Length: 126
Image 1 (tube, one colour):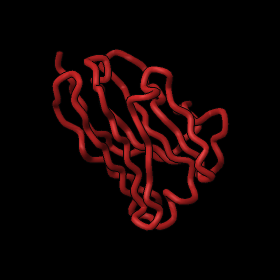
Image 2 (cartoon, rainbow, N blue to C red):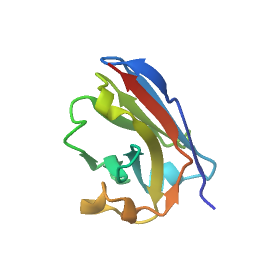
Image 3 (cartoon, rainbow, N blue to C red):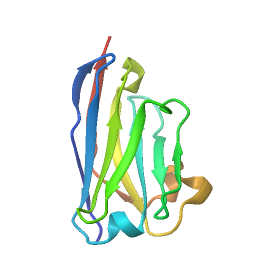
Image 4 (cartoon, rainbow, N blue to C red):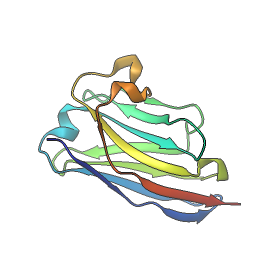
């Protein structure tokens, strides 16, 4: 059973940076699955931040383009999200997700993913 564990969240001031990590206890998850980062703020729906298929094709949400970067290390079964120039509106619980099939145009759709981590909180103050 695939399990995902996120870490790296915290509190930063606007303009700061954070790097989130997502580790899978199951081998080959990061290298073979479609992987994504999502976030959910209180009272709002979960939204896609970035998704990447196993061929490296990546889709970013417009709100984070140029500020966030997804990367992964297949050997370490680890996915990262580097977040720069953080804004107060980036405040949310961030989740790592995985899907066993190609996501394609659905990389930012929560319903395309069937495995979720427990989340890590990111708070950006102005």
